[in-house]
Length: 468
Image 1 (cartoon, rainbow, N blue to C red):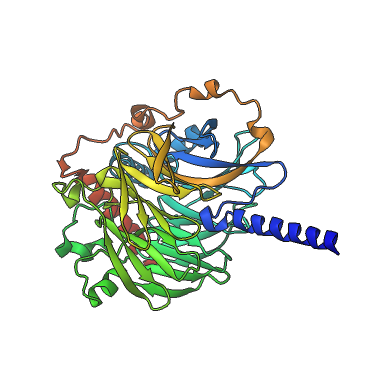
Image 2 (image 1 turned 45 degrees about the horizontal axis):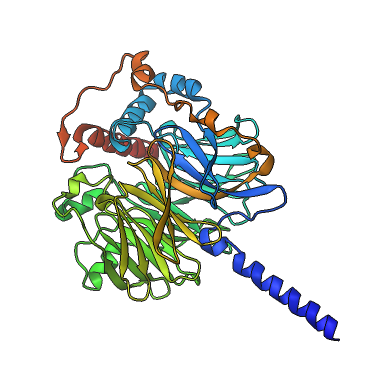
């Protein structure tokens, strides 16, 4: 009996360790199975590349070209005046004068494919990681693709269609559309619940307009936080966070929910809002704010019109046990670790234009993309110290934990991956159409006319389609 008891105790211990190591609560990373390896995907938005990073040694293992079909896509864009107008508007304003080639990316559970949303090309593609070829492509119904989410079982992919007030649900095996759900203006963030039964979604409104004063807030359009039934795509809860905050005495907050982080029991959500330096602790059971957490604004002289797409902060992650948040202080150039009991921040300055936060699969580290530095900053949750800075491609934004087949990474010569980005020169991209974008006047921190052009074009297209 003693031997059996020992075996039983060892089995229990092993099971307990396996449960502790389960990555779903830390980063919703796909499970590591035989033949796969845990990696961090870093999307270099302006390059059209994605870096594959070892999350333990912080070495770059591979660089993937996510626009191998760029010549074909540009030929299509140049042949369609409406697409060309949107392409140029996205480039000149939303992309700060650059193409947006990779917004979001996930891996298949078997480590064979990378799924990438490409805003400037208005699509989602599956890239075969063995060959670098495109396995399937889904074109947006609208003019720009944005944030995505992958179901816990890896079978479904959600992608926000920026100009169509909807989110598409795709079959990851084929790229075929199998469903959709309605959203507000400029659908944005998507997160599956841990069990895959719900989707937490937010629309951010027309962040590309210069009408950023609180008195003009209604011009930003419909901005909702939604809870969606993942099996039926029914919107079961739709909240205007700005209105709810005002009802509780917190005036002049935007309704636009940016990145969010869910507590381990999914009863609380930490919400970043447009123009707000901090986050809202929100009760999902009672649908009310628990606390407004102000974080330092290190550049108080900046005007709202200077914020990148209305983002004061853009990036928030919660460690697995729910005790610490990792926050990207975008316009103040810092990353912060925030205690969820005291809400005391530990600031790391000198992280220029941080634009996303995500956890390692084991929950030990927080990765923060320093988009203007072309780096990923690694912060240890336990010590709250920066332990590494990883050089990546141009303008890293979204990062996701992923898995890749080990044989695809074996023997990769990293020096060969330092070649120039595959991004085409902007002048070459539009020269054949003889439609070079004019020199446009700047207002505040953005370009007025491309913003208004994108706004007007989007409204016209939507109204035309609704009337059809």
